[in-house]
Image 1 (tube, one colour):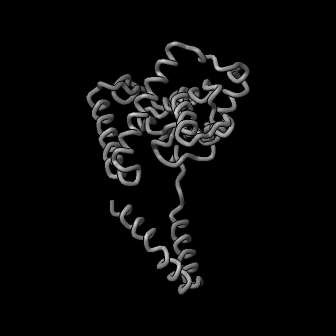
Image 2 (cartoon, one colour; image 1 turned 120 degrees about the vertical axis):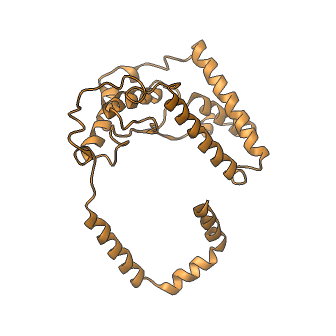
Image 3 (cartoon, helix red, strand yellow; image 1 turned 90 degrees about the vertical axis):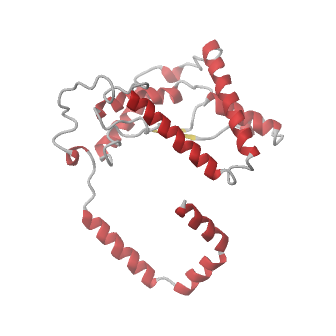
Length: 236
């Protein structure tokens, strides 16, 4: 967050000539990454979520206006309302039971943090320059998607080989039965009644029958470019 705030400020000032610092503020929301949540020993996901949320909490001068935390069991399926409430309580405990929000940016001026921020910003700037050289994000979309896939494949390889440690997955796998997990998936994730799907299908079919088909067709035809773009995206 420190790196991309600095980059946004610099790009707005140097590329677009925005002089007012208030107009260069980067307004964003934060969702804690759920990619690292594990199905094995899912109770460990609680501390993972808290640790990642500290990245937002401790960036006092560059906070996001909103933070969303995943639920501990999202690697298993849909969280229940109680699971979502647990994630909300994590934020509330950080806000009201610690003094983290009462101080300034405690890492401001840290040699270690500043060096890491500079390293991230430099690498990101090189990535942006590469994308621009490829013709921009739209022209480079296939290449960028390929890089994401290769990056994830490399991450999985490191975990499977044990090079990247993941507690409960490839190390410290011994465990006692968890009271959170229960006897099966039905006990720890939200299960949607199949009748809901059938009801939604009926509702969609009724809506399609009642709508003005000629107007829909005319609007769809007038958006031919958008239609072709969406079709290409779906096939890729």
